[in-house]
Image (cartoon, rainbow, N blue to C red; front, side, top):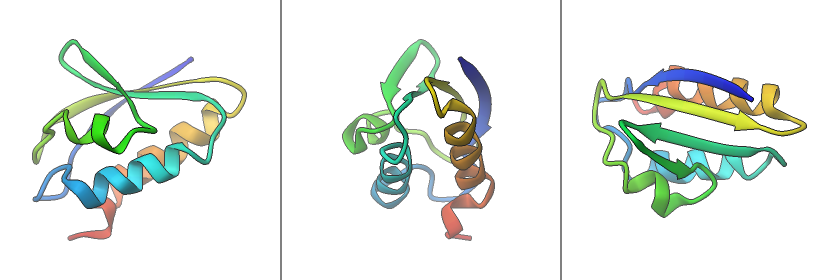
Length: 88
């Protein structure tokens, strides 16, 4: 299992478009992928799950990947957050 800390860097936070991008990216991988905030953990492959986190600008999240392609999954998702979902 890989665990990474993420920070929402785009000003609009995680709204529908970034949530869809996260879910689409996560669904490319066989590994179980979850994103959490506080004590809540959601399936990163679910757009609705990701949106329900209500993660605004500068929110800290934890990414957990577990499975055969966990390293690649973590790298791709970290890159999405670093690129601000190409919004800014």
